[in-house]
Amino acid sequence: MKLCERCNRPLRSQKSMDAGMGPVCKKKQEKEDAEFEKIQIKIDEVLENESNEAV
Image 1: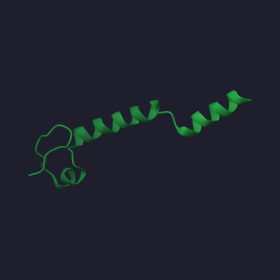
Image 2 (image 1 turned 90 degrees about the horizontal axis):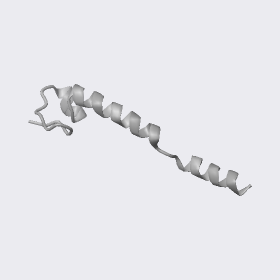
Image 3 (image 1 turned 180 degrees about the vertical axis):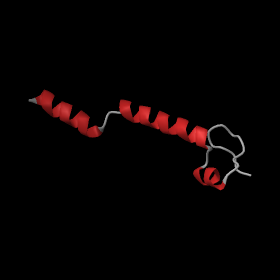
């Protein structure tokens, strides 16, 4: 039996087993991933700021 990667509870459906987590944990993970992406600085933004400051 497979366990959820997030909460370690047993997974019941094949779909959950394939995803590695249950539907509730999957939604929570997607929300956290979206929040994480919002706060990330991309290298293009850093390089653009450096080139603007050099001018």
